[in-house]
Image (cartoon, rainbow, N blue to C red; front, side, top):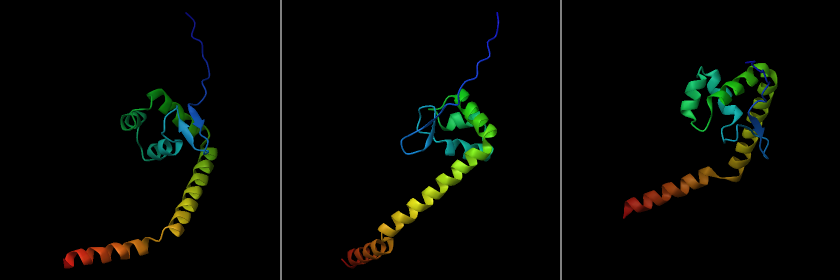
Length: 112
């Protein structure tokens, strides 16, 4: 019997929003890299995210290690996008006005 060695593509897909997901799940590359950097093993990652397959987690980690610079640039870009969206949402939503109204409503209810 002969062992055939075949290179398998990384189990990563980019969705329509430009987010890289692992193996047709909703788990992002960002998530896998973050928990891997915290020292979480592939087995622990699968335990935390049961929709993942162990082989896909190992392949994703291998992809990250082989393409660390590009992945870090992607993660940095995603972080910048998230900050921009957060700022935009905060400017649209006046949280202080809501807080004041809720406190006034609470004070009125306590009077009754």
